[in-house]
Amino acid sequence: MQQRIEIATLAGGCFWCFEAIFKELIGVEKVVSGYSGGLMSDPSYKEVSSGKTGHAEAVQITFDPGIISFKELLEVFFTIHDPTTLNRQGADVGTQYRSAIFYHTPEQAKIAKEVIAELESEKIWGAPIVTEITQFKAFYHAEKYHQDYFLHNPDHPYCRVVIEPKVTKFRKQFLEKLKK
Image (cartoon, rainbow, N blue to C red; front, side, top):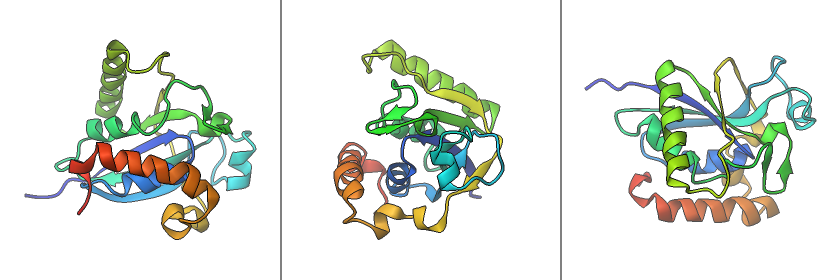
């Protein structure tokens, strides 16, 4: 059977957290931290952090939909961040930390809307989901030091206090979807 590859681009706060988690899923071949949804080409971290470029910190996930579906990626996505806070995740505040799905195909847009509708009807969150669903336009890789940040900096205070607890919770909840 020939392998099919798809791309998903998701944002929901600090890309370090998302990268660390999505890399552990079976069917995920690559996760890159970067920027999407903004107005300028090839922004720097400093420019994105200013909030003036319109970009969100995002991850671009290369995955095999024969092993893990886009819907399953979204199930993880909605578990590892708060999609009800506009332009904020924890202490990180600004449009660069917004919750967003940058869809690559009409099918991804349809699935994203269906997943949000399911979550809203189940009333899992105490507030409405504010995740934006926007057509993908461009993705810019973050600087090299942002790639595999959690892996290379496990003792950094942000990694210990914010990322490690998220990764631990994720591993418990999605044990059957983890790479061996």
